[in-house]
Image 1 (tube, rainbow, N blue to C red):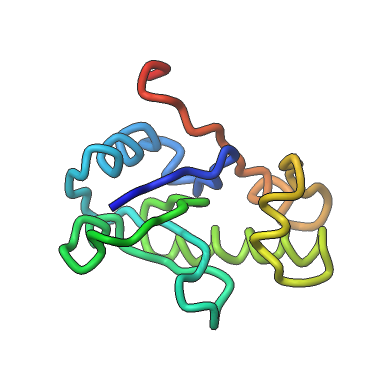
Image 2: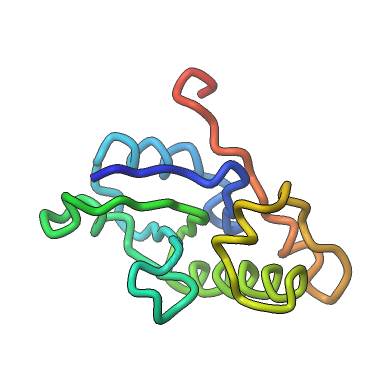
Length: 131
């Protein structure tokens, strides 16, 4: 399985406290209970997919490539992070072309609105030597 990371990874508030632990566990194919990852949809019928981080090491995903754009500490937080990504995508593009949005902009967090603090969730994914 090949995993690549969004340069401006979305990280849920609870996941921020243990983001390095989550990222390293995923990079090293270690099982990590409770954490979730958010990726562009593999099926094309949706914009995003949510996976338990533990599931990425399953044999049926061995030949898959994952581009992780968000992490969360639990399922409900994964839903919230997903909502925030979709909200930012629509607010900035007026549509749902996630690939074009990710490839075509330097990530600037949304401002304004009642969820301003929650939307400002972008985190740089550290390289192994930075930890």
